[in-house]
Structures are given as C-alpha cells and as structure tokens.
Length: 234
Image (cartoon, rainbow, N blue to C red; front, side, top):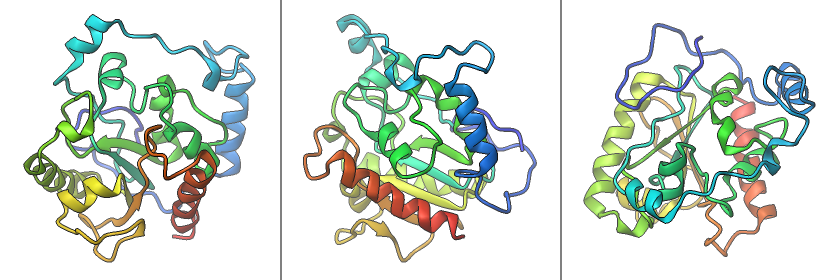
C-alpha cells in the first residue's frame, strides 16, 4: 500500500485493505523509537512533541478562514479519525489538530495508537501506522459552532462517500455533538455505534479540544484506548 497525504477529492490508488492493524506492532514501535532517538534522516534528538510550533500571525489566522486542509489518508487504513472542521491555526500551518492546547496527539499516544507522541508536523507518518485524519466539514473556521447544521449533514454524506472509496476498517468521529447533528442521531453517545458507515465500523470519541472540560488528558486517553482495543481485536 502506498501511504501518503491525499486531498479529500482524490480517489485511492488500486490496493487491498490490510489484513491486520499496524499500530502497536513491534515494527512500528521500533520505527517510532528510532525516529525519537534522532536516527532517521533529517531528525533531531529533541522529542518531537516538545518542538515549538510556528505561531501564525493575526493576519495569517484571518487569512486562513475558509481555507481547506488536505486529508491525511490512504486506502485500507485501520482507523480514519474525523474531526469536525479545521480551526484557523490548523489551516494556517497545514497540520491537523495543530493549535496548542488541543489534546488529540497526546490522546492518540496515550490510547496506544502511536509508539510516541507525534508532533502535528509529523502527521504524514500516520498512514504507515494504519491511521488517517479527515474532517466532516472541510472549511476552516475560528470556532466549530460557526458551522450550520446543513453543513454538518452535507459533510456526513460526503464522509460516507469518502469512506466507501478508501475503505478504512474503523471510522472515529471526534466530537459527539457534530456526530449527532450530521448523522441525525440526537441520542448517540460515545463509543461504538450500531450502524456502519460506508462499510466501516463507526465509533464516536470526545472532542479533544482544550475547551472540553468534561474530559481530562487521562480520561481522554482512556477513551482513545477503548477504540484502540476494539480495533486491535478486529
């Protein structure tokens, strides 16, 4: 399988779904440890999660409104994570969940999906671990509540088509409120959902935004860990 970053409108190259999860494998752990130690080309010994992110200027953030952020996606992923929509910080940097204080990347590691905590700039390493990121709504806004219900419903329909093309085993929507609106499931809760999406099993995770005071880093990591356990078991 060719792993890489593809725009959401592009169809996948020919390739079959992988037979077993790649995250948490010994090979992935060795690769992650090697990168963390600075053995890979162009790497430094500094832990990637502590690298300072470039801080967009006020003008750059304003210009990022409405921009589209390319997906990190490949055919046959184990888990495709689905954000609500890109924030201005992500649109300005080109990295998903890039705003300081967003807990997606720590939760991904705490949950067992990555051998170490990745920096947002390392998002293109995810497909090699069987993971990807997309959004329900492509356009960037300062706040998710700037999106209309119609946009979320349309985004859910487009997501179903994308899942049908790329055929991940699991789809994890990161944000229960957006899921309830987009998929017309007003009583949906966290965890596995009864209906599949485009042939993939469906899971709802808490929103990792730092504004979500209902979840601590520990409980958020535990929620990601439940998905990891389910995906690892098939």
